Image 1 (cartoon, one colour):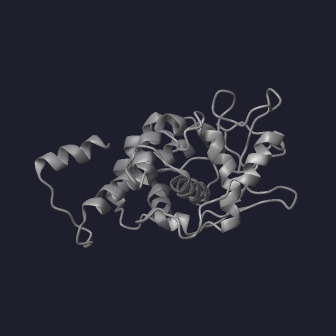
Image 2 (spheres, one colour):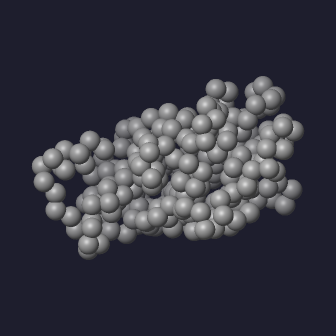
Amino acid sequence: MAYPYQQQPQQQQQQWYGPPQQGGGMPPQQPQGQQYYYQGQPQQGGMSQQPQHQQPGHYAGGAPPPQQQQQQQQQQPPRPGAAQPQGWCGQYYSQIPQQELYELQRWFRSMDRDNSGSISANELANVAVGGSVLGIDNGMKLIRVFDVDGNGTIDFNEYASLHKFLLSMQQTFKMGDKDGNGRLDAREIHEAILKGGFTNVSFKAAQGLYNKYNRSGMGLNMAEFISIVAHIALARSVLERLDYDRDGRITVNIDQMYEISANF
């Protein structure tokens, strides 16, 4: 499905997300003017299907430089027994085959512009989703959601969960856009949120979020939908961290309420 706000080459009409153009953390030594698109058409559950001649996670600009290829061969993904994301966001990590973890390293390195081994909110803010960059607000929210160890950045394991989450939300948006106009209207948004896995969001809450993020007044585009699910994901993560007895309810004092509200 092509979106009116998303410029893609004519031969590519696929959903995508990935690093932005020059200055946005793409692999070096690529021809100028070459745009980078994620080639996978996400399937339900966030899995991506690739043409046989192209491996998942590769950019349209061709193979990386030889030095980067050598680094990719030498670097190993985390072992199954290594620390992995927990909680509700850990479900996305569990969907990733071991081979795909190798391929996701290229994405991770291209976004890690300072080569620190982790991705900050500023680096994540430059990632393009649906033709628009995430922006610092979404970047900060998603960092808080997927930063399991609480160090303020996301490492490779945490990034892998985030990557799968974004692919899953892309597919959810496409499925929810029943009239194919590239936007979700007030009737479509609640169903899309439910299909995205947030089954405890009421119709009233969905309408409130729709009104908050429908900045154009013309319905939600992909980037605005990501803003909504980032908001919901953060709220769910905050609840999960404070719900010590896991009954879906929390009791907070005024100081904790201030702290929670600061996240939004």
